[in-house]
Image 1 (cartoon, rainbow, N blue to C red):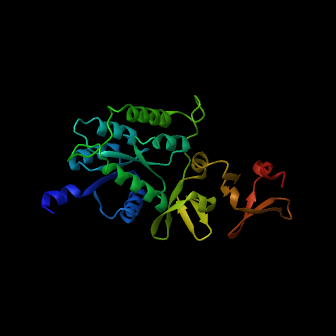
Image 2: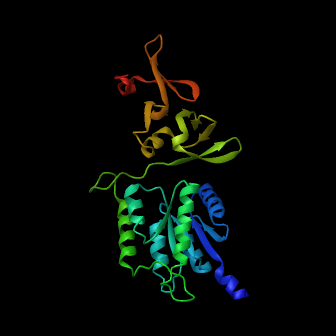
Image 3: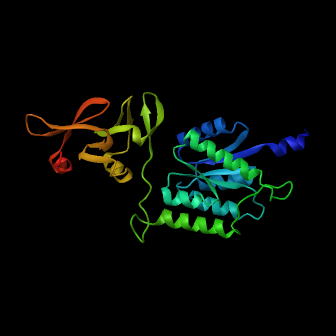
Length: 282
């Protein structure tokens, strides 16, 4: 194989996400699923992503939809608007089923947060298939374009979805928090929220308790309330959110207070008077 042929066979990518741990996790998982994929650069926001795509001309740009400043959708528009664009967009998303169904139309690919190995493997196979499509002219790379009605419509739908308040105009709720970036000892970890038993305020920090370990975050309970699924995480005290699916028992102590215990941890969690209505039928 000549040097030019070898260069042409290399598949390259840029990753853009404002969360460093998310970039690291995605890069690691993609490397497992697609060892031949070469990551030429990483961006912390949409503006950096556009600049890096112009500089490196990668095959793929993995763009987080929600980034400060220029969002992933705005970055995608800028990239796809280039007349010489050959880069394919892959959105990194925590969006709900409505958005996933839009992606499934095939205009643009997606990766769901947090990156699951099995699901990511399917995405990789889909991306490889895009590179092998026979309709692309010889020597070129098939790429999405704003000239395609399906691509333009998808970006418009996603943009309106991103801007719409929850429950307005038939829009579905804002995507809920899917994982927590927390300190465990001297390291940082990405913790899926489904693994959290409860959150509890601890002076300057919020304690994140799983069945295996305890972690700390600086995000206060009042912010978590807005970001977590209220059907999953119940506030039982001004300082405590509990995973409803982890609740094992609700009893009363000698003072008549309701006490919650959770599966997988010995701590007893007090229910304040404001939230006793949650357990009236128990």
